[in-house]
Amino acid sequence: MTAFSASDAALEGFQVLRRHWRVVLGWCLFAVLAFVGLFWAYRREKRLFGMSREQRDALQRTSRRSADADYEDAVLDRDLRDPAQRGDRARPAERHAPQERRRVS
Image (cartoon, rainbow, N blue to C red; front, side, top):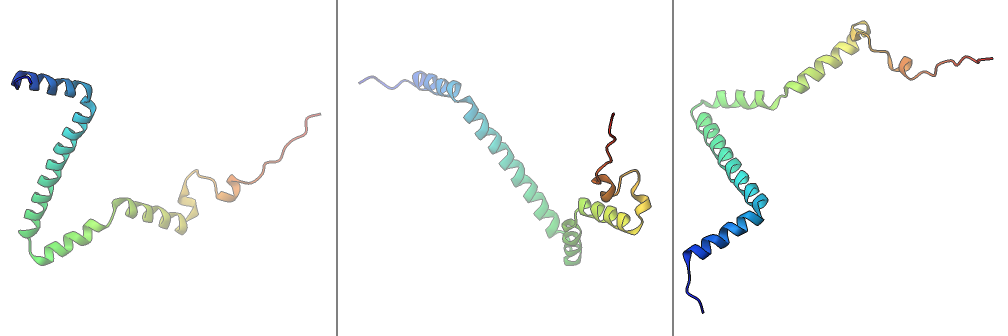
C-alpha cells in the first residue's frame, strides 16, 4: 500500500474539476444565488418588521397588483369605450374578411 500524499490528492481533485467544470460552475452559481436570495429575504423581513400593521397591509395590497394587468385593463377599457381610439388597427371582421379576386383574361 502506498502512503497518502496531499499533493496527489490535490492533483486528483484538480483533474476532477477539469473534467467536470460545468457541474462545478453550476453548483457555484446555485450557491451564489442562494446567498442572494437569503440576503433579499432577510432585508424584506427586516423592513416588514419595522412597519406598523397598517403599513404592511397596504404594502401587501399594492404588491399583489401587477402593472401589466393595469395596462391591459386600460387598453381593453379604451377599446371597448371608443372604437375610433383603436388607431390604425383593423376591426376583426375587416381583418379576416375574404377579399374579392379579379379574373384576369
